[in-house]
Length: 139
Image (cartoon, rainbow, N blue to C red):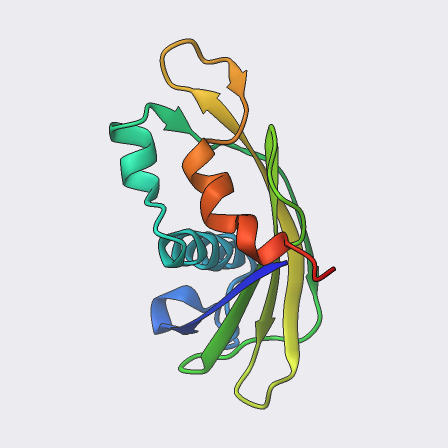
């Protein structure tokens, strides 16, 4: 399993009138988590799109809201990939507050698409190679 963590501080403009992180902004936090997780592996979304011609549209997203995140809280976004990607990749996300309590959890599933043909393709070899070591089991 591959796992990466990043931190995000809740900004004033991302909150509702109660000072809670607005529910619609959680999807952006999920995106930050997965982009940084891929960057940690040496894979850039920008390079995938511009140089390799590979797009990664979201196919589905599920979220569970456990407790509110508040303005100015520093959140920990833990992003995990539990299975090597093939035609799809699923990112599991957990967001924790400063007290290390779960705030939100969910899953985002994306596919790989050839930018020219708009056809679904298998995961790029560079991504598989960069993740392979995290999925090897001790014998």
